[in-house]
Length: 142
Image 1: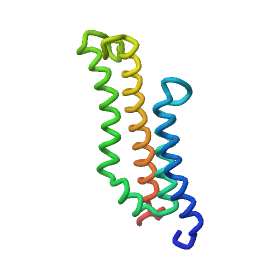
Image 2 (image 1 turned 120 degrees about the vertical axis):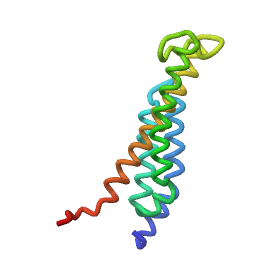
Image 3 (image 1 turned 90 degrees about the horizontal axis):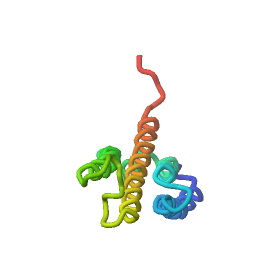
Image 4 (image 1 turned 90 degrees about the vertical axis):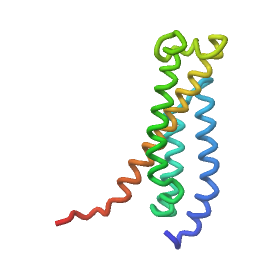
């Protein structure tokens, strides 16, 4: 891909806006359409675009596999911990009302954290799956 200079420049210009839009979808999800899953897909798509244009080795330097694997687990852990916090604070699993001094604030905080966990997990899972498929040579060994 070294000879596709236009693609490389356009990709470098677009990726920050793609990531910014993913953050908008992530943090706007509790007020309107969007949320963690959609934001995670958009965020993951930015890394996939980077990989397609700059190559798998460059992408793995930007997002090393141990970090991506930790993000997959971290997002699920965040989701689970928010649920457990509800139990520990006297409510039910994923009962957001008990997370803050006022139920409305607890609802907002709980949704924000759960959607963040979903977004992190979806994004990191997409990148992991793409890296696994992109790393295959396509040849069968005999």
